Image 1: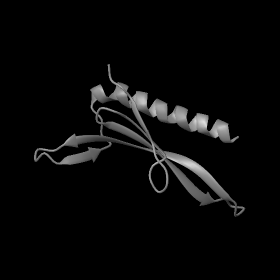
Image 2 (image 1 turned 120 degrees about the vertical axis):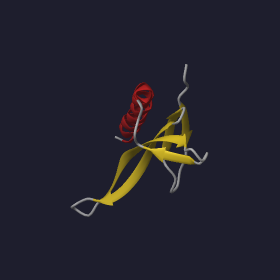
Image 3 (image 1 turned 45 degrees about the horizontal axis):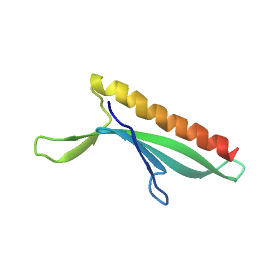
Length: 91
């Protein structure tokens, strides 16, 4: 069974990372100004699959193989759950 790893970070770093195997979903907190001029915070999620190329160098892509889909669903679901729960705590 695959394990989902999580990592809590702060600063200019990602807010949270979820990974299993070569797949990583990263939660970012962003700041912007609303039309009214208020500071607003919102979160985005980036997703990537890491792999080694034919030269043995690590690369990343957002293209998935069919066997990646269940794992991708799992970690994207964890990212979604994290964001929703985080928003509930601040409401």
